[in-house]
Length: 461
Image 1 (cartoon, rainbow, N blue to C red):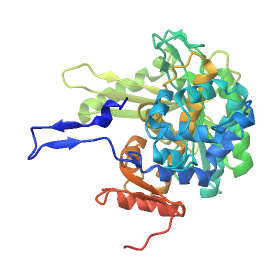
Image 2: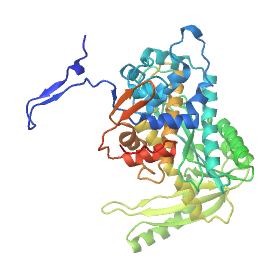
Image 3: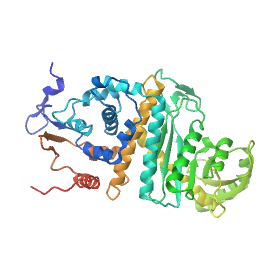
Image 4: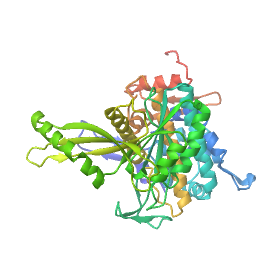
């Protein structure tokens, strides 16, 4: 039976002449920009390294879809905005996706079905996911080292998030803070101040109601060791964390590893009494200036259960609102940075971790990393891992476009402008030709990225 969309539609009214629309163009794709990601993946060796971590228990003579091909199909699909496994049935014959996965765009067989990919995701073992995570992080660390071998500092940002669940997923638990059944994933980002952007190096799904430090310290120790292997033991490593990590075991571990840290600290009665006189002064400043006012203070502080005193910074701020009561907004930050760093500077260093929130928004809103609808916990972790790999590819594409208008573009905009291109594909024995629209508005940026990935300019015909 012919699919209904292939029959087309007819607009009798609304245009100068009747408009016929038919879905019958052979050898065409709406994801024509995919060669950029495919070439970038080959350059980085990302999917190849990840596929080496995954075993294949199937009989070799009966295998139609190799592990590497399925990984590429799934990761490229996620990057293109197809988060569900069931999307594979719609994309199995797409010529651009087939070509990106290593098959002939026209003559090659279709890619794996949704059922095949679902079995693949559920077959991956937890140990293999750990190896994949390490490969992903190692690649990011190595690339940053190549771009900046001797930075003055390397920064690690970790942040927990929430992944609300709506089914019977394993390890989904009710969390009292979020008031929902959920997972509590944790994300880690690595940055070099000279280069700017925070790069995803860690993405782990955790059970609902998990403590903030669960799985964090083990990942931190391993990552710190690898960073020092690449950048040298003299490179300073700064860790920035929110208040959920302000636990004695976390602070003791950071100091034992020789790390610098800036950690948000929650308010309590002792700290409120300490900043109250300062708040009175700041309120007067806000009245005189007719706007927000702030002062910075510091002290040594030792909470119950701590082995020693630590340096505490307070940002004492007052924010007036028209027609409403003035809002007191004190914030506290723990640090072991030397006294040469003034309190205001330390607080500004901490605030820079807010950019991580934008990276997590990209992961959730643009790549839907929280689409964890499998019943198996390990399979859901596999989905998180594959989505993280897709995000790493898009971050690397953004790096290649660092001198264009896409240098700070969200990955959703990059996908819309550079990957979702209508293309007509021709395949012969000697070559493959992709025809893009003559009036493609982002052709210049696309060609810039292509040339940086090794393509050569063609002579105009």
